[in-house]
Image 1 (cartoon, one colour):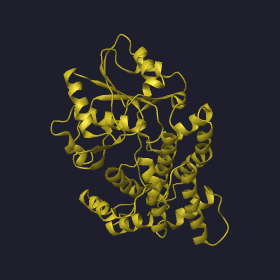
Image 2 (cartoon, rainbow, N blue to C red):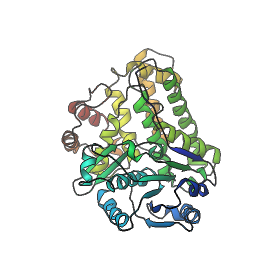
Image 3 (cartoon, helix red, strand yellow):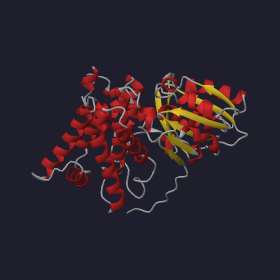
Length: 385
């Protein structure tokens, strides 16, 4: 196991009716900006519960943060936040709203042009406004980590930044608010969480048995419970297990002391930026192709994956790896997410442009051993056609 430091200060308030508890988590004198996306927080009752919990407090609201939150929209929120001297942010939503709110938190204390710290992946951020979250879509794990992904429409960029200054102070995880999620968003969330785990697990062995067993347990939970959600969207127990799995997938625990990949995510970001595909959709397309292309480097962990996660133990090693990759692809398809570019009407003609964007963003040495060159990325995208 590699050396590591692990510290996660986010307080989790898990379970039904926990939104009322936010009152005690936010300083009484705080000037609060509540951020959210579209109308879902009205339909599922989250906004009304938050308004009730904040009754008598100084708070304002900013709605309209879109999926794949954009610099342009978030800049409007910055104007409002500065106008009212906001010193606490409360995000109501999934990863997009939370990521966007993290951007606002950092930008409010950043002395220069805010896009600069995004382009530098968080470098230069020295402080941020405090924030909390009410999670409505389990997927990204943003509610318990210090990372965010922001897009910029004017330049067609989608970039990640990371800084401990935007770690949420608290997050409310109430499975009941997810009952009304559209099927596609539920499926995207399960696949997103699955791939988060895979990016930290499917690398190479370092004898990190605890992390491996945690990762495998989370994967098995998603495989078991994910399809149930498509049939039983108001099953509290299933929602709770998927919600906590998605949070645990990217809160730093299973990634401590182990090599991490993230090349699937980087290719996925470019597909979203260029073609507007959902984040979960891009991951379902890229991961099986990435595993096929990099099966030699990932050989040992793919065999472990086949054995412990998919119960594949017969046949020679290559056949077992084939089976594990096929089972992963089949799981994504079972969740309703196609796994080929062609399934979305993309014929591969934009692959050269996608590779050019990777190059422009400095993504020419990706993966756990920096072996995913631009040529390897091109071959992955070709495999995904």
